[in-house]
Amino acid sequence: MNIQEKTKLLKEIKDEVVTCQKCPLSATRTLPVIGAGSHDAHIMFIGEAPGANEDATGIPFCGRAGKILDEIIDSIGLKREDVYICNVLKCRPPGNRDPKPEEKVSCVDYLKKQIEVIQPRIICSMGNHATGFIFEQFGLSDKLVGISKIHGQTFDSLSFSYPVKIVSLYHPAVATYNSKMKEVLLEDVKVLKKFI
Image 1 (tube, one colour):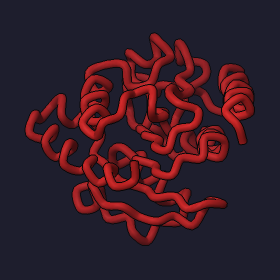
Image 2 (cartoon, one colour):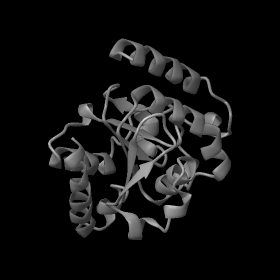
Image 3 (cartoon, one colour):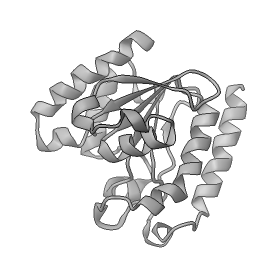
Image 4 (tube, one colour):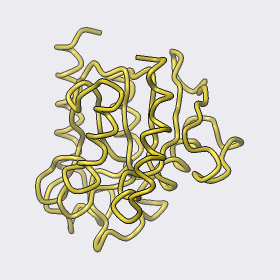
């Protein structure tokens, strides 16, 4: 699939999300946060859900956690525009509460379509919620033991029509509360260098 076809299909997904009313979050959001970056990315970073800054702008990871994510991406010799960044949920849960299971299920088809179109070779799940959900959705439930035990590790998923590696990372927001965690993130992301 060429880049023009991918861009057209991602626009169709965006149009679906903009009018989506599958769950109550559509009524409380300001803007849906579909995703951003290269439509031909080899690496996709997936977080849990948009926060207040993302809800206001429609841009994923645009606040403090986003600045840390940019540093992490830069540390492996890439830029934000070289990768694709999105979330499991496309709408912000009120008050940044944890997503409800039914909200994740309502949104997962959009995420699966994005992955099918972009066809990343590596999916980086960021944080406990995103990692748990992605591992469950993509055939790795038996590997799930909590982010503190599997961060920085690479897993092969057989749930796609082509080889995909899933790397679990701490959510970049953790480094906004604990500066020592930035070093852990920078160390964990080095695993991606061998796939670039």
